[in-house]
Length: 247
Image (cartoon, one colour):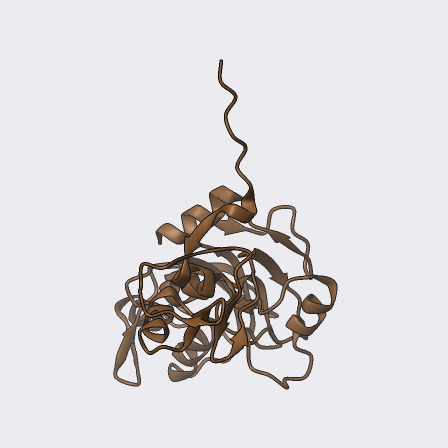
């Protein structure tokens, strides 16, 4: 019986656009454009062939700066109250600063922003191509929120939220709405929506003269808070990563 040759990871070739995308610089599509423009070099030679493959040990440069080898990482965070999660720099109490200090990962960005009063689940990754794909209008991401309002809501507004509220000439609608708690001290709604971010939800209720006092995202694309206490995060499993990429 012949012994098969062992594959050395250093001798594995990958497409140049994937190599660049994996570094977090841009998506594969953008990488193709940069390659065609002659902005990418391999081992000090300009490359314009989109089919080019490189070894992981090769020196790849983009605009005369070395492209660092990187691998995609995916995290699920159960965001605590009082912190902001945003890719915008210079924001006070940005949770990403704490996250970066405790992980070797670099260029991790969140899918969407979360303000101080918003809690719950948010996906973070350095896979820019996935972020861009999830941001497309046709990507219907199932999200479940719990919202605490400043007052009870009228039935006519429940109907209007399902039919759709116009914001900046775009219609946003909720799939399901349930009253979770209705007391003298607190009024809480459970809602399900597709790809509606917290800032949009706040504006929808504001247009109907309600103020959102608290907001908690309890489900994000099938991902839940199970075994994930507030303020903690974990890496996504291969199955979870695969599901997100199919959205």
